[in-house]
Length: 255
Image 1 (cartoon, rainbow, N blue to C red):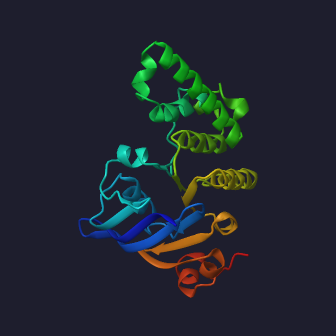
Image 2 (image 1 turned 45 degrees about the vertical axis):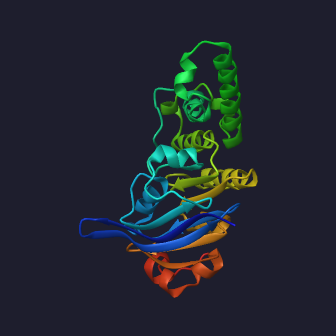
């Protein structure tokens, strides 16, 4: 069963076509990846899927429902949540407080309910705290809960972004270059976290340049070049596709 379906999605900026008639389906319960060279249209496509940009043409369906052109907040409320290529945390808040923000978006009454000091809000605040601590433990940051986000290493900030996104209880998590800037050990830990996310019932779609990571964790790979989809398939199928080798992988096959 597919959780995400794109049909003939196109995004133009004036005379530039950043995404050109792209269609594919993402299956629930899997890790899927979008790869391609710089300028291939990957992040623009993520922006269209997640509601940050409306497509010029085509449709985006999530869980069988058309979400084309819906505002970001509505898309996220339906369970489709993304992280960004550049870390976007609240640097003056602790790691725990950053995750709380995501949790409050799913709480009754939203963030504003936290300002009301009644019994219900206090109980809800305890639940938010418990969930935030659980998610920090889940991504390996349990001992950094009360450390300011700005004091974390870059790799830890990446994991904190994932924890905050998970706090919104997504059905599909979009990760934009989650391994960018990570060392080998951090990337291996990230791969484990992504696997654990899927094991707990959240599907994952990533944009990634680390081909070793993609080939290790993805069940399906979609390849873009100049805004067009040039290939899709399993990692083994994609890495042997001559169009992919020419456009992106430089003739190198990844075991």
